[in-house]
Image (cartoon, rainbow, N blue to C red; front, top):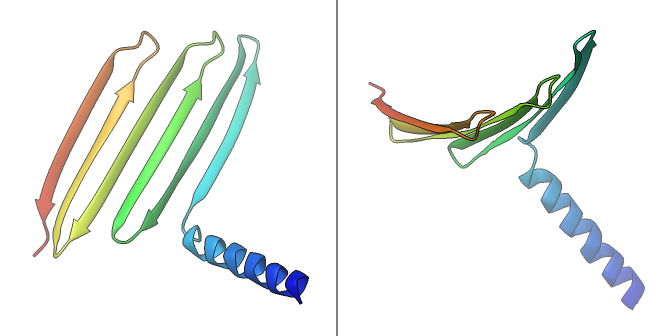
Amino acid sequence: MTKTLTAGLLAGTFALLSVGQANAWTRDGSTSSPRGTASVHASGGCAGGSCSRSINRTGPNGYSMSRNGSASCDGGYCTGSRTTTGPSGNTVTRSGSFHRY
């Protein structure tokens, strides 16, 4: 009885986690050339009126950059921001908002 109950609880927990991550995604890719290999990893998702995305790129020389952003809407008013970090560590943050009619 205990094993059956535990298995049922675990199955239910995994089912809830799967539903919660239904809008999540990831992408990976790479390419090679005579100069070296470049790669990219991106992930994101949406839940409750908000979406976010993260992307990391690495170039053939090992230089990398990252960008993280999010946006949300409530009652026709939307806001969003993103932060980009370049290969030398410099960071730029941009944000904005708009109202949908």
